[in-house]
Image 1 (tube, rainbow, N blue to C red):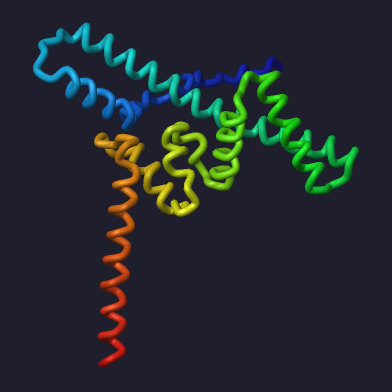
Image 2 (spheres, helix red, strand yellow):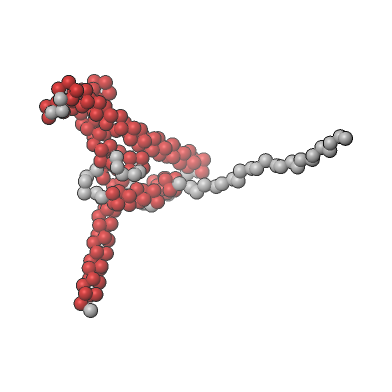
Amino acid sequence: MPQKKIKTEHVPAVRADIVNFPVQPEVSRAEIALRNALGTVPVNEDAFSRLLQCVRNIQRTKDKISRLLQDLGADLQLMHESTTEIVAAEYGDTRAARSRAREMFFTIAEDALDLTRSQAQLYLSLYHRFLQHNGALSKLNIGELMVLRRRDYSAEEIDAVIEFKENDPAYHRKDIRKFVERLRKQEEEVIDVQTKLDIATAEL
């Protein structure tokens, strides 16, 4: 007896929903800055669009440079560790050996990489300073990292600067120190109010 063919229903392919991603804060800041720079000079939309595209391209390039600087610091650190291990294996882990390894490291940086001693030291120190901070090396450029490399800037303050940069169109690198000063003043005011409340509570 012939078997009946089982009729299968055609299931249409699932199509991905179209998602409109929000405009990045950097784009908004770039557009605002560009319009402010142009001022009252009449510019047609085509010319403005070309200028804005240049600004966006340069921003992406700067972001890429920041990521590459992170890689550069990591490789310099590995190079420094390797030269230290090589010298220590030959002369022992002594102060003189470590000094010799450091000189070897700088010689390689100068002769093989065309980096001055100060450049190699800068990249290495920035890597050491921000290695344990989640996001600083990838979200801040070298100029911003140089401003924040002092040890008196806390991890919380660096987080606040990153948030300031990502979300505030008024952000400029030159404002970092003033921004942190305002944060510290606000914190001091909060502590002062809390202290007064604690004293008042204790006196009840």
